[in-house]
Image 1 (cartoon, rainbow, N blue to C red):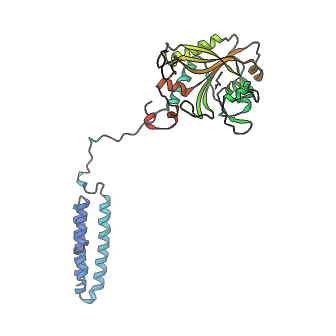
Image 2 (cartoon, protein in one colour; image 1 turned 90 degrees about the vertical axis):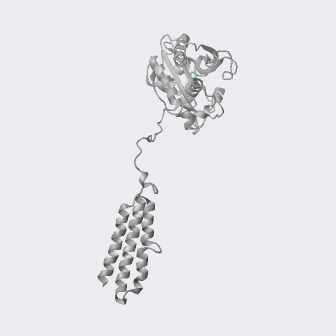
Image 3 (cartoon, rainbow, N blue to C red; image 1 turned 120 degrees about the vertical axis):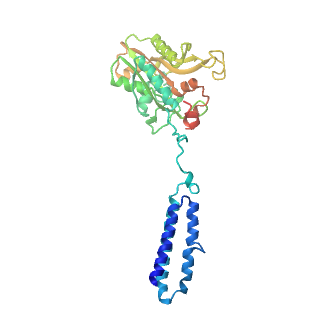
Length: 339
Ligand code: PHE
């Protein structure tokens, strides 16, 4: 008699598993669950009717029925979880016409791109490329460049001080000294890198990039400086880019000149970008001051040379027509992905 009850239970279990085999959606699995385990389900009914069995059969039948109920419950839940698309398992066939997922591809930052282009042009003009530290001593950033202590020219640069004697470099010019200390003339080198000034508005950020150039040899004159810079800007923009040299002052060059280029937006007609002057101020330059040669042990009677320094952001803004320098550093993908 007990056998019969147990066989009966096994049959119910098997039947449920068979039905599950044919189930293809979570809806169908749910139906099976209700049919067997629901309030009026087959197993539930069975458990209810156990009281009608002879007393000695009840414990074994109850135990077995409960076991099967638990196992079946687990099996059904696991099967439901396995279905990928809950209610439409029948439709989860692979749609080969569906376009694949597109992964966004990274690009070089516009400043990096312009930086590389500048380096490429100067390389083609015979310049080596070198790099110096961003944290500099007062000596390299100022003193060796002929900025005496307390000289008002130091105020031209809104310096970030690390300590009394250590600064975040305010320009790439310290690399002139570092280069000349290390190698004898002739030198022909550029150095790209980050510089820091306590300044922030539409055209200034506390960190920006410069490219500095230095050329020292025998018989170098101001016309060589003009020639190199003209060749550079013709390649950077185009052959119509004319240059204008204005007298200026830097402690480490004599004579010094600020260089303007003909406005690349309006070609000298006058527009918002050039403040209606037709010209854009683009770099500082000059002939290396003899005091620097003394600081590095060059023969000032034998050698002459020139140096120049320009902002990479400024050139990138002109090249791409960007009117706010801060765009470069906001890391907005909509902006950056255009380059
Ligand atoms: N270091 C100067 C600046 O940052 C630019 C410069 C470089 C001027 C080389 C002359 C020679 O303003």
